[in-house]
Length: 416
Image 1 (tube, rainbow, N blue to C red):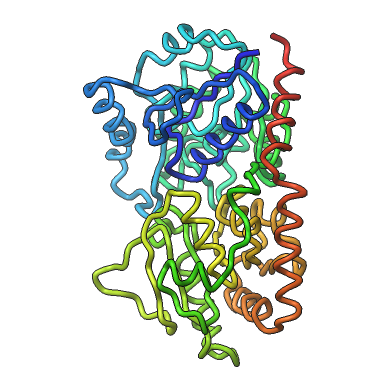
Image 2: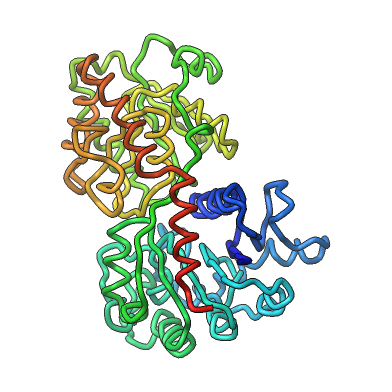
């Protein structure tokens, strides 16, 4: 059986890294797997990408071109990083026909990579791994509090639109027309996203399965904390709070402002004098923010070894997202034995067992999040148990080998 994984990228970004890890897991299971991407960062020979300078140049500008329709909406929510229409025509179908796989596994295919209409032209069974909500919305990747995807989108709050016939309705109609007869199986990494997909007007008639993302436990593992801190030039006598994501300080959904509020409450904790903050996924701004704690910025880290060491340097990882699927950052931290504090939203309950390997605060209740961070750090004996539980739960439920075998079973059950 020949599997083709489609992903706009192979390494940069959580969804891309999840797709690439699955590809590596399938290869390790001796499955004939290839990966077709628009932008390649890895040196893996089985990852296919544009080769010529012109092709790579076109690929580089596609994400910006796909965003052009947004210029029609001057009052749109500009704190939203991306809103995808996938309207650019390209030769992706011809590329796939040349590879001639038995099964196509789609992942995050936005940024102008796979047009909406292209899916109906593919002859192979499709398995679509959703990393956000885009597949069943009119263009947003996370809907926030909007549930119009249950019906037919339109009057999109992220566009600042009060018209039913807007860009979101146009995108929704294109999807409904092109996808109604697909040979499609949907996979979601989290139970929350599965529930959303099943309630959506676009995907409710397709089978939906939950298969969690996987990680190689030999790559992400506990490290000697003193050594890890010396590598990053961090203090060895402080409690380190770690926060990070792609565009960690700019993406409103990742909860940066909520983190700031939680840290305000944390300043009154007994151990506040012992706490320092580390942020990755962003560089130090020209005018640094005063969090009330000394703050270290380590910038973008895409190397697994460096990320694993950074998680190992921390005492707690905080994920204050207001909406999220199954974030790699939390998963990676748990594999490294670092307890996590987060809001009880999205896929967080799949990862964090409250007061067993971390703390789940009430959604957007920053005082509760601060109490959770303090609870994790307050008792040394309890903290060591949390560290042990983090690693044990991660290996038991999110091992890469286990994920690859589950996908292989899904592929084998398809009608090819």
